[in-house]
Length: 170
Image 1 (cartoon, rainbow, N blue to C red):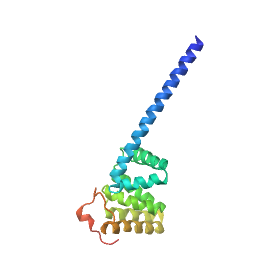
Image 2 (tube, rainbow, N blue to C red):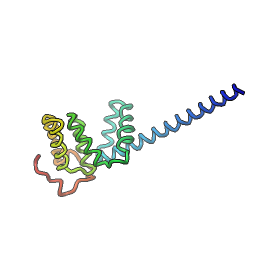
Image 3 (tube, rainbow, N blue to C red):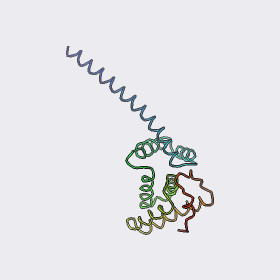
């Protein structure tokens, strides 16, 4: 009887583990697809090119970014996309990561953050991250704004209001 119960318990455990693994795999695929869709929503035009560029660095890195960043984190309902991009711009400005900051300045504009708000976020970072970080961030933001005005960058227009498109030089 004891051997039978042990064998039965082992089979149940194996079956449960297999089921959990299958559900996890199915969920991972779903997370990836959700991440891709959210990334495209945030990035706007050029999202496919950005995904390919990230995939060319390493496919596993692209998969992790799409699943964790854009599905698990950006997909949480407690903050809207505009709030998330405001936080991202602030963090990247404070850390001095200007290459990614440029990407997220464009993304912020795509989800409704205005140029004026981006400038204010960067000015706020001068207080907490220092003037060198704020100066570098402002330069990165200005490059994105200039590229947009010269049509090098075509945003999806998510939050851009016509009256906000003309901003005095920063």
